[in-house]
Length: 495
Ligand code: NAD
Image (cartoon, rainbow, N blue to C red; front, top):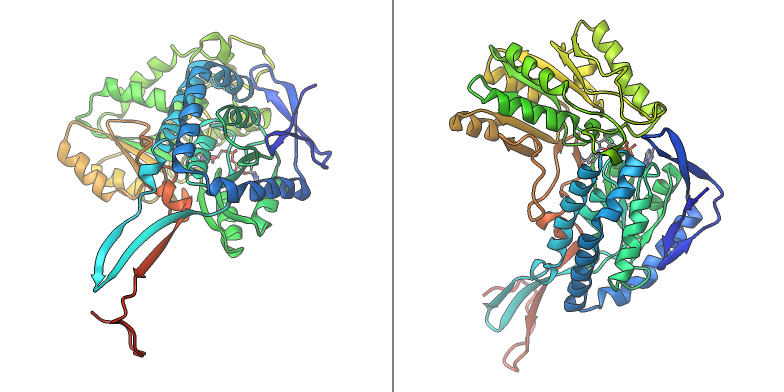
């Protein structure tokens, strides 16, 4: 059986740890390969490689860094089908969705090609007689990137291209559930001309994450995953003096006003609720319907759900399996909770007929109406193909409900009333807002990140905030002395 190895100093790396974890093909329910799980010493070897590569890389001209990013962009664009097939095989998402993930990741590579522009500093001439002040941004050093299973290509791409373009060297620890895409991308970076040691990949679990958090040579951590781990990573990393951005989980609401186009709403709810089997941090998981539209909307959504095909993502269906059997069972368990809590199971995805192996980790699209907000079906991040409907009686009640959530990743409003949309945008306590757009993932030159328990830290991913995170500023005050200056004066200099 294949083993997915670490990637250190531009080559496969076995390391000392003998621990491994299974990597499944979730559509077939079988172990397809194994992945190595790094020990602290294995992580230290990757950090040492990144540290050794840092001085020369930080000193590499912006023009050269930019050329490498352009070359990587061209290679990734040309070979997107290849990596999409890896994503489908290990994650289970359908091939068209995997290609979409690569396309969204490419946006950040394209942003990274503009690094000379992004790193421009400021200059103020003659702030005092003969004195000039300017600022420069410098890389941090070795940066750690820890990513979740649900976007095995796109989330690493949120970070490593910008980090590298800004002059840092990287140790990437992808999810052990679908690790192959990261190594594939690291090889492609090498092909694009990246010097060895600038991008390293270590696989692993908590042991590897803790080793990165503990290592004194790791300057920063960019984390994406569930809220409890994000909080842990943020608290541990910052207590070790590191710069940390830790993006957490979500429970994204879609507010539907009575004047909305209900066909557009139903299409959007189905796409955003069940795309990638609901395993997206920006998935819509709660439709908040302002009465009297709920009955009609539920009918339209369930009619569309009856047309969805579920199966092996390689075969052109709408939705694939969940990531593991354990996760599938956990998600399905919420349907029992829904029944116990008095919600109405309108479409039950258990027992779905699939186009694929019966051993796959299947759960069909599920719609639960009249979900009590006291139920865990409403409050927990389920992270599967389960769409809840909550009925409210006013715009204000809907906004208050959204604002009472501990999460604040994404939200959407569907309406034809511009004034209501504007009020929503101003009042809602959420980091990314869609107005008649169900999954408002910002384009590459804006930044991605939620509020509250959806992001710990104060810098979002990519965009200009990404560059801010991966660099630190120096402000320089300079004077070229002429002989007239001098003398002793212990006060603050004045004009
Ligand atoms: P996860 O938290 O289980 O794992 C994320 C990373 O942390 C992985 O690399 C994993 O190996 C590591 N990890 C797991 N347990 C750990 C532990 N006890 N100690 C230290 N490290 C540990 O998340 P996941 O299941 O891979 O991904 C799904 C979650 O990610 C969802 O909650 C989803 O909302 C979230 N997510 C958030 C965003 C965002 O931008 N906010 C984007 C994608 C996914």
